[in-house]
Image (cartoon, rainbow, N blue to C red; front, side, top):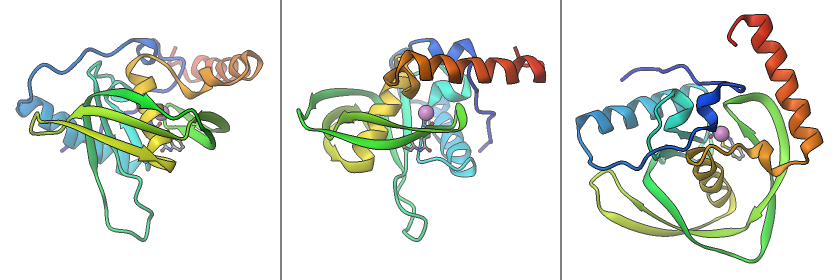
Length: 172
Ligand code: GNR
Ligand code: NI
């Protein structure tokens, strides 16, 4: 297993759409292991492969509370097949936009079809934090970030702040 650096905005890769996984092999299993290690260390409740620079449609999630046993979940090529008309609001954050939190409104429940690590098609219906997290991660696979759901004013403010930090730190 290996910890991998998490990409931070305005890194252009975060705006790239990820490609579907076509086969589950040793490389993919290693990627999933690295994603969990990186996600738990951050710590975060979800991670999309593109956040560590790998443009593949792979998501890891663990929404268990701190006092609960670990509950790692892997979603390969996830697709939303249904979204509830009812919406819900969560305060979201993103490991690629450190220390910025804002409320986002999304469908309260979603059905998601995906492949598990054995390549078997699965479908789940999620609600609450898992529903929010799945939508946040699937957005990443399409090059979208949670700030895209905010007003242009707020988004521009965040992008400007992080561009300034990147320039100062010599990362962009
Ligand atoms: O750790 C994370 N917490 C979180 C909180 C509310 C809604 C979504 C998330 S996902 C985020 C980790 C991350 O950036 N995943 O892409
Ligand atoms: Ni994120």
